[in-house]
Amino acid sequence: MDRLKRNKLAKLDCIEFNVSLSDYTTYKVGGEAAAFAHPHTEEEVIEVLQAVKGLDIPFFFIGNGSNMLISDLGYDGVVIKLGRGFEAISVNGNIAKAGSSASLWELVKYTARHSLSGLEPLSGIPGSVGGALLMNAGAYGKSISDVLVRLRAIDPETLRVSWYDQASIQYKYRSSGIPLFHLSAEFLLEPDNLDEIKKRIAVYLAKRKSAQPLDKPSAGCVFKNPPDDHAGRIIDELGLKGLSSGGAEVSSKHANFIVNNGGAKAKDIYELINMVKKTVKLQKGIDLELEVQLKGRWE
Ligand code: EPU
Image 1: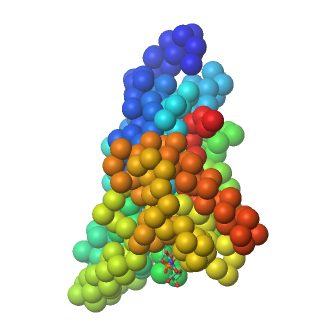
Image 2: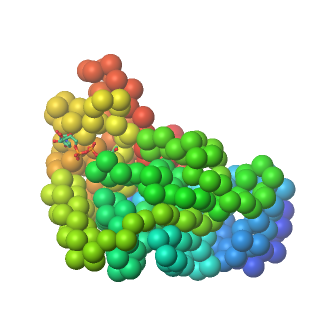
């Protein structure tokens, strides 16, 4: 980023420069962001967006970094992480409200404590509420959009803040239909017996633990499932479990996970992604689509 742009950005209160991103992703890899903004209010978010758009600086929002692979070469732009003002979770009747940077798992536990049911299948998903909505995270037949009532978000073009009804967003499998910068969301849940909710949560957590390598850094499933099949099943069938590159490995527990065995670089993970994709295309004629978001420069 050139000095002039950097100096203009430096006028923002919530900005830092040359920030290592490896602690901001669950893979625990990635180089530095040229700039890192952590706005705490809606006004501050708009201020940051006006600045980056005005200066024509690339940017992206990061949530919990649990579905993201950031290049070792870093990101020559601004990474925006919503701050404390977007972490609140509350309940009013059957409606739960959460800021975008609240943890999805905290939301599941909070609503359970208020005897509200509906989010149990999403137990243990490591993302933020905003990230989960952006990707329409799901598990065990339930997607987060199934319980969403409305979303408070910024229109990327006009930078206007408004509420969007669930139906207007056109959610699909692991995607949301319109690009929006998420701020907070409201979910409609159902009253239920606390012990029953807790039991279901325990069952989903156990299922997840038995099928997925939760003991090692990863970004969950790397590829989206192709229609009527499972990327993990296909990769497994092709004997790719255990395939490694540097410190990264195709998990031997779940073939659609790439795990960091310690000391992996982003380029190791990227190389494995390409090897798996190529093999699946060659052997099965299937083009696997990435679920993990790639950020930064790749060689
Ligand atoms: N399978 C294998 N080998 C493997 C992995 C899976 O044969 O290495 C087989 C399983 O035996 C099963 C089938 O593939 O018959 C499906 O496996 P699983 O139940 O683990 O579901 P999945 O389709 O691989 C999806 C989501 C997960 C979510 C689980 C549970 C995607 C890409 N993945 O996995 O989401 O947790 O269902 O509902 O949709 C994520 O998105 O990051 C993620 C982990």
